[in-house]
Length: 308
Image 1 (cartoon, rainbow, N blue to C red):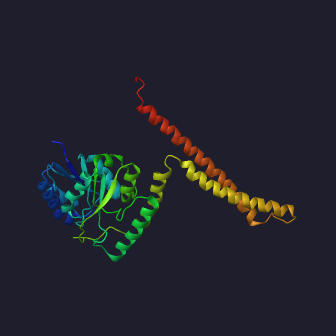
Image 2: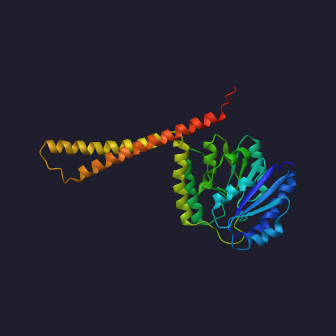
Image 3: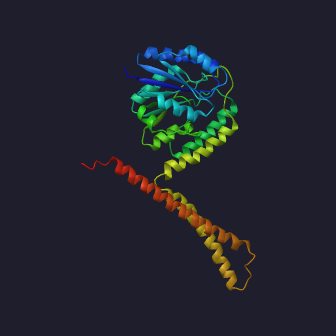
């Protein structure tokens, strides 16, 4: 029987929580009466997760282990490769996401959305620092990406299989799944969900993840805005440098005509440097545009039926 729902749980040192979370998830899914699979992706845990999962595995509960800690995006990618459901649920393994919200998320998909995020805004059970840094992150992400949302990084999400197949996750890009989906033309939204305190263990959140997330936001902005027109980005930067550099050189030329010494003037060196950098950016942008053009032509040729 085809699998209707796949639940993917990336887990890193969450053995104590998995013992409680897995039975709760399977209870909810059993009540729904749909074929399902629960897939735990062990992201290189060192706390005995493998032994715990040996007792929890079944025909509907799967387990795959990464040899080393590769990060949540990598773990989700592995889970996506093995998920075969028509609908895919993402959950964190720390017990903070409520399995009883799964039917509500699926209802939102039935209502026309392709991806729905369980928004914890207003109900979040986390430390003060984590809550407030997340507010800054979510506000910035919404403004930069143009995608409306209050909780992009919520681990509780539901999506159609087509959305899952379109995602290429690496680094910290799992934080931007709604943005990537919206860029792909899918309909995304949020529904408020319950959020609980962590049951056991300690959070894996750290300051380094916060800054890595913002750096990846730049990556996402570039991919979603300039992927098909890279010259607009590199050419724009190059033109700005060129205008400033040319202005400085014109100024130095006027100074020279007026009889002033310019050989040791910082403005002369700065102007020359900016013009050189401008030419490099413009050249790089044109090369990137050529690569995109050739790649697009190959993609079109690959789908054209020459036999009509």
